[in-house]
Image (cartoon, rainbow over all chains, first blue to last red; front, side):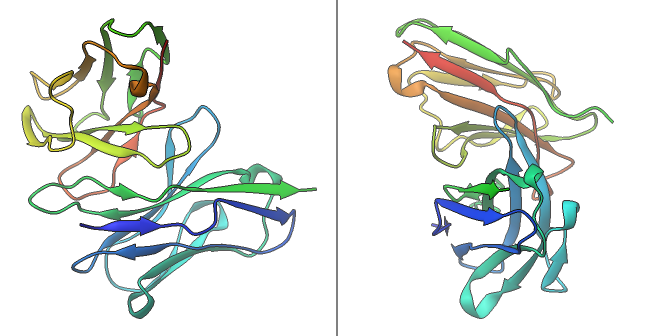
Amino acid sequence: AQSVTQPDIHITVSEGASLELRCNYSYGATPYLFWYVQSPGQGLQLLLKYFSGDTLVQGIKGFEAEFKRSQSSFNLRKPSVHWSDAAEYFCAVGPSGGGADGLTFGKGTHLIIQP
Amino acid sequence: EAGVAQSPRYKIIEKRQSVAFWCNPISGHATLYWYQQILGQGPKLLIQFQNNGVVDDSQLPKDRFSAERLKGVDSTLKIQPAKLEDSAVYLCASSLWRAETQYFGPGTRLLVL
């Protein structure tokens, strides 16, 4: 069965500093990979996705992620964070297989922005 | 374009009571998902519909949970009877077709006392 590991439960970054959130996955074939962001009391908003092709993908709000097959990783980066980036970030892999398409999510990384 | 709509946004019930959640997907989206998100964890898939048929309900606790999408548009998720451990956010998502990008609603936050 597939799985997603987000090693960092919490990350604190100063406003204006760069950010990297780690994501490692276990999947039997070439995965579809996603990063979602969740603000308090809100649903999940898609930041970016990788289906195939260029391994460096650009998303909304200045985020990017790189798919590294050899490392089974899909890390999220942003060159300069803003206070509004404070939220919970989830990495996900899919489809779930066996004819189904659900996503498997990591436990999330809580991003704190220091002024 | 309107997003995924869910109601109610919050619900508090006592254990052994029943509760129902409603979801209206993005117009034209054939695939609908229900996820359960327990505090401090990522969402976990409960059930996937394709139009009005069930694709995957392997993680749905069928002794107490049920879901339907009778006309292939909106969907209802029911819990009867509720347990304390059902306290969670229930998220609905939809996609245009299978294995495509899923768009999530705001969720229903359930507290079982």
